[in-house]
Image (cartoon, rainbow, N blue to C red; front, side, top):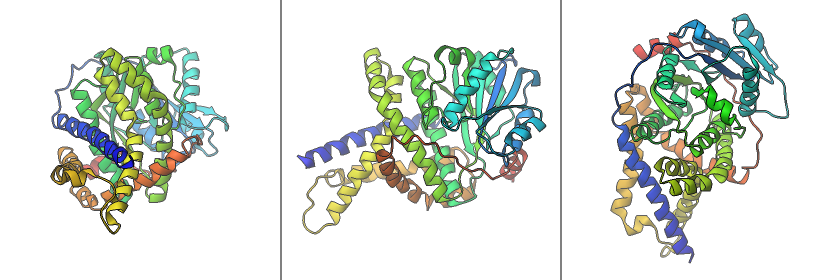
Length: 411
């Protein structure tokens, strides 16, 4: 009985993996840009910040110099439960410092919900709201791309997420590889196939009327994934703009990375538990591939959790003396399993090639499997602590400016 269950789980996981592998082939090409439009949309640019005095100035400077008419956008720094000089820096640099103090409701989701209510009370109305984290840097044409996408009918848009410190450590390099892979072989295939893209927590753009209609309501530890689910449930598919770039600072150490990823996975379990079955059922009833695909994406955290347990059980079983007690796909179809495994890892190499990653990034592919394996214990622990909704802050210290990044990329 147990052997049949384990084999059945292996088959289901292999099918889901094969589905994602097939999707990646649709990310090997990029469609031509859509129609360009003259600047016409107005934007409220929100910057979520909690004690970010070290890095927020570089982003504000960056945002004030975007290649977009200055009268068409305003910058608001959400100083959420700050105890440092974040608010003063924002005021000194001539942008709006919106201070929120609520130690009981901590986290970016709550801060955004509060800020949107404050925004709607203001005399000026905006066509769209864009959101960044205080440690980000933004390509100067970001709002131009958002303007084009809004004019072309998009209501929710995710920019290309990149890292601003990809070579600080083997951890930041692993994040960079993951981002290049996700942008090119997860997001772009869904764009090319007309499916729903998923939000990445920053570099997001929302039509104001949509936000007013459905409210924010995403206050979990992964507010981006939660809002993605809410949109797709309503038939609003987020889109992906490959050319609008947002650079995110990644933690330098394994400890900081593990703490950040644990928060992500705890939130992911919560969102998957709430949205998977309703979204899957609605997708089946409506014959909507976009809804079914998004439901499968929500389930990824359980795929990783179950897959890691099954793999460890089979490894132990094969290393014990005597004949293995459990059947495995590796034993049943070793050639298929070997090819599938090689292709799965080769995706990351292909992503680096397609994205023209710096040559020094390739050497980190040696340690990248360690980063991938580290998701197993993190996800395992997250499953048993998923009811912990305590938000944890990731400290940001790398003061890098956009021109510094551009000069490094050119060299």
